[in-house]
Image 1 (cartoon, rainbow, N blue to C red):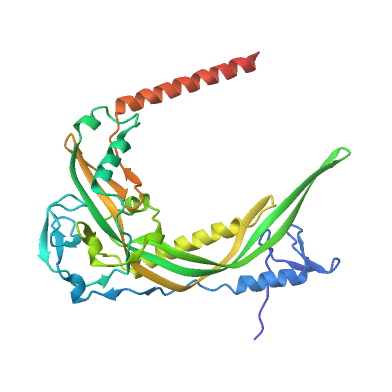
Image 2: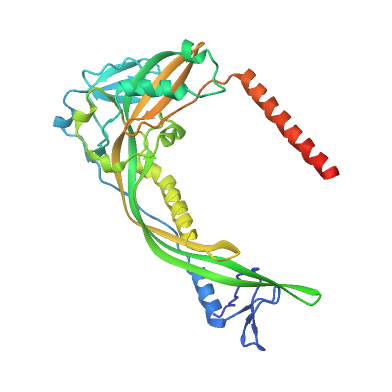
Length: 359
């Protein structure tokens, strides 16, 4: 059986024809000419795209009887979170939703963490960080600092999956260079089109993904990054005096998001190597992920809750680096006053500009 082979123009997408006059290929729509071998190679690459599929390997081990001795599980009656702690830890409220949690017994089931980053910030430092966080906030109500009351402060190990893999990438870009010149009464513009190819391997180490549905992703991502050089092999001794959430999102469930994050990072890094052109557009991207491995990790976070005029405000602090995030109330009167001042200044500047142009 015979079939039709059609070459597409990399510039406009039209069907390219053989140009007998130039002994090359020429697009009848945009008049762009191509070398025959170069266009054939381009067409072959377009036909050889393959899907990006990677099966991640999780290296987590099961808990042993020696690991769980003296460990308790606390279950939140509201959000259902299972918080793991040593038997001496006070666990009167859920660090996520602030509702009471009750002890249900020894820990059982699930994977044992591979690594942990121990807390480096203590409780007193977390409280001081909250005070510093409130300073210099112009739109914060003046009464917030004096009237807010610290309801709860808990050190929590949040479950994360850390993904390692290699990315084998082949990316082709459509690029242009533009030249302008004049001759006599005429101005000319010449646009040259290029097919720019980049091939290479990139290694990714410890790409994080939150393994808890109770910890909002925007909050867990806001306290990143962590210094993963501080990762140590997991030992239950690191949990003493702290709480630890149990993962409820598996590495397999996190994989699609991580794959997309890695693909996006690869595309950005490869694009950074293409320079010297007027325009650059990605035309074909083949990224294959390989040697994927996922580690189960516990990362330290301080959760702080304050009450102000009947409303709870929650903050999170990276227990390793001290990065502090959280929402604050806004003084609407100050906001609208600032908005009016900016609007008035903008109006005044516009008036001055118009006045100057009128002379």
